[in-house]
Amino acid sequence: MPKKTKRKLRRLTSIMPMLEWRPDLTQTHMFSMPFKMGGMQDLHLHTPIKSRKKKVWANIHQKLCKLPQEIYMKDIEFGFIPYHNNMGWNVDEHKIVWTNQQIEIPLNEIKSLTLRGTAITSTEWVKTYNPYVKFNKFTIDTLRNNRRVQMSLSSIVQSYKNSGAWDELINIKKNIWDVVTDDTLESMWNCFNYYSSNNNFIIPNPISSLRMTSTAISNTIYFNFLLTKNTMTKHKLQNHISSTPKIPNENSEIDEMNRRIEQRMEAESGEPF
Image (cartoon, rainbow, N blue to C red):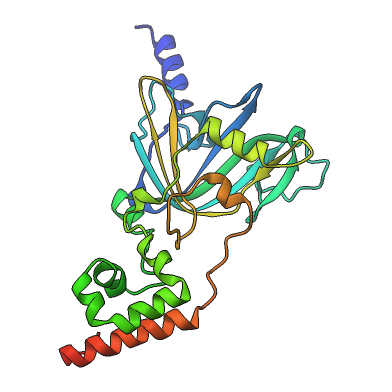
């Protein structure tokens, strides 16, 4: 091969996007979903080129993409790339506006929806869901499922039922797969577009964690969002955009019942529970 041709190939190779993923480095990664006629159809990763001299937005479905089939992130924040900055948006060095809360933006002002988060492993992603936020481990794992224990602690069970907390307790899901959403670029477009007003587009609230996966056959990208850490039942994305997620108010009755259970267990075992 002629030297001139080799130099051209080296140059072309040096400017190709890397599209690699390193969850072990706990790095923050950015994705964009460009607006096109009919919605969002592509997912781009902000990634360095091979020469490492700069970063570019690259479609994750490129042939040389080295991204894993499954990607996990935590601490998800949404933003957008404006068409023009004549609105005085506070853009970062990548020309992105990070909102850190739910807002509505005129649809014609947005070039791309963006999100960023910290790369984590699948094991770490599973741990982003904690079912024991409101009720302690014994109450969820043993009390609600064991009839004998319920009879032994009948007064506490009745207190839960009188307060209305029993129905909430028995509906708590322990597995993250039972509480995350099932979304695609199309469903996200429909959700953030349909539930807005006056031809606006919703930039949603931050989200606890995210799993993304893609299929080689259809190039469809699936998003599993963990909307809030205290999610109790299967959620839809529109549940998240109705209001800013709040930490649940302290429920003194439930706290008192949890305390009574712990005291009972300590008394029977002779050790702190």
